[in-house]
Length: 299
Picture 1 (spheres, rainbow, N blue to C red):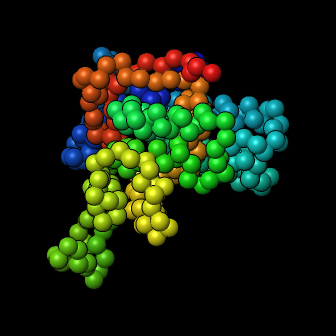
Picture 2: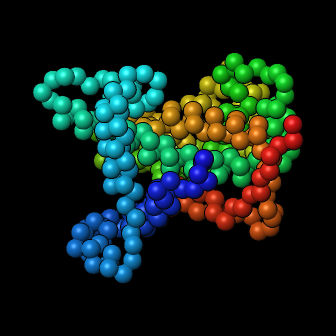
Picture 3: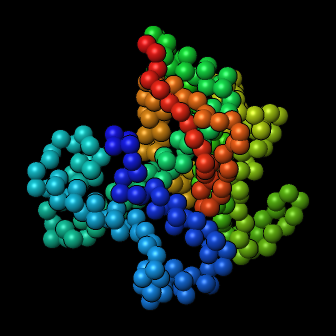
């Protein structure tokens, strides 16, 4: 954000790859003959540049690990210090190095993509519901407000945004166990693959209320303890159980901090209310052609 640019083109690269993956994912048998084929990709690269953010990111991680080790960092305050401090002096250093690289890659790369898409979603919801935007800004810029609350105003804003438009859109697939299952009055035999679309799960009126299509962050504050627990248990934007997003906690922390900082310092408005941004769902639900004007907030 300091450079006002997409660092190393990672966000653009990620979106490009997921666009291809979403299409080819419908016919996975084709993948070994297209994006998964080195010969085909080498030939295509003669005519078109295909981004590879995975390789770029791994190289960057290796550089940061080398820098960390050469400067003998022991502060323990940064995430990379926390991860690397767990390494031992055993002979299996190569395996530990690979594990540390994998943890850093999964955490930061997953979080980077999630943050980029989610922040766009939050601002889309706020700026197309300007009353909600003004209420949130007024609270965040007030001299005093209860920052110690676990459910803060900016957290409620991004929870409600992700309820309406979960950024991670592929359904969470599970294999039916040996005894089969009963669902919605139907018996589903063992071995079948079933899934829960987050977009539909977040529109269950019995859990989120009758106004499910309305962006209303206040619903998270108004709910009693029992209702709030049900809403949180059925909030699937980052997955659930063993399939939960590995970068969830870091992503939520960064989204919350970024949203809080931006709304305190800047005023936002849509460049034009028509046409509204187009919504795409290539692996991640994203708002495109979304143009915003920002200016320094008046003190």
